[in-house]
Image (tube, rainbow, N blue to C red):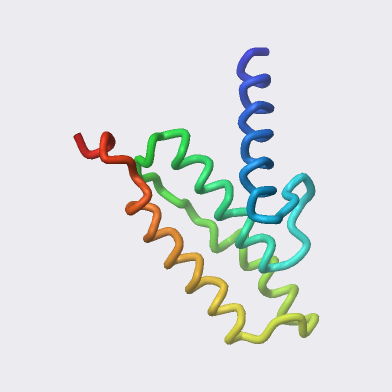
Length: 106
């Protein structure tokens, strides 16, 4: 019971973080851009809960592929735009290490 309550609190904090960037993540992603952004918010929240410790991102490509392929088929994005979404995500993931507090390295 307490674990579920803690998960609800964590989700609330994640929603607040996303809202500070102008996003409402209370619903599922509806397109590739949102799927990438929502995934990044989840990663930031996870890293923050570990005080900046590195963590595996997992096989997110199988998840994002569904959104990207759907948007490509619908003509909502081009292959170049899809590649840019992934490139920007990778750049953001690499920047996380610079967000660590000095205490983390001690």
